[in-house]
Amino acid sequence: MIRPETKTCQNCKSGFTIEPEDFAFYEKIHVPPPTFCPDCRLQLRLLFRNERTFYKRKCDLCGKNMISSYAPEYTYPVYCQKCWWSDKWDPYQYGREYDFSKPFF
Image (tube, rainbow, N blue to C red; front, side, top):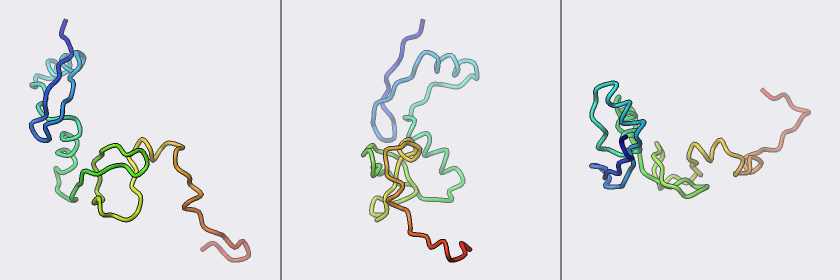
């Protein structure tokens, strides 16, 4: 049985693990195991058409590193996908008063 293997990303030098199930998949489709970490591979896939510039930055809610189309200097809060879909942040912080006597549109 194949054991999990820890590798170092060729791009960002962070460590990542390749699980036995992953090795079976790579053999099935006849490709070698990856040499880039999942975040760097995602960045390469997203940059394929080169329509955006991507930045490494921290999520403004949980503080984890993420890849974003917004620069770290961006003044508005930017959340990772997990935090965005969670109930950790307060949606009323972005709410606005509404006057029901006026039409919405």
